[in-house]
Image: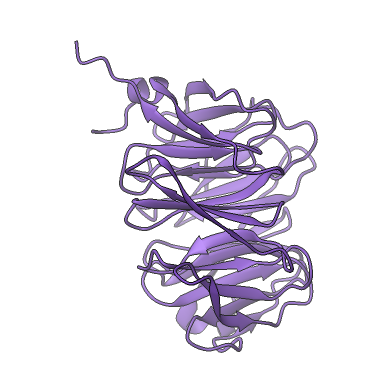
Length: 316
């Protein structure tokens, strides 16, 4: 099924799960779309079976806390995540036996961005210590380099795993070649907003042609990934408290979605720039995290509760 404006408008809540006592801070789908995993401020890691549409287990990270959880490349049984309690070490966890495979120490302040390479075991992290670190799952030390982009960097890989983007405070998006990152950015795009806000996320579209910038100021922006020109600026969703709300592309790169403070999901077309849907998931609080499944026609949104959506297409 192709995602269209009318398909998006038909999305309804299929299941809502109340596994958490505090906010869900991150959700990630496995690359095959069969599984989802969430991290939350109550130190829980909840595993979901997408085909069966239900939770299939809960793990705990009571000592360290858990945030920014990510499936590793091509593996549904291992994850990496950042800590939000004891220290700023990134942890590599086996979901099958709930054992840590490796620790990645080095950051000296909270990790605010974590991105897995789509092609190998490399991952990158951005931290409030004003550094971006490049790691390899097979080695505990920051093997592949360290860059000082100045400011509080968010970062993400492109779909080919060759380039990463770094958003520095609210001033610029810088593009680095992973193989020559030590030479500095090969491109830098200014990102001036007409209101005071911080960059809270940066993501590439799956076709590699667009970059999505999230902020905490009730505004998101889509850039041309090649020349940095502004393609669209989207607003009109509630975020009066300056929360870090996650935005995402759909897998076909045709739509951008973001949750809001009032628990609704707002959707725009990246082709026309028009808002195509506002979906009410009856969330009890702000939608902190939002992800579209990479393989199946479903997406997840979460406040304290986790909600999975499906389209309701009338065949008649």
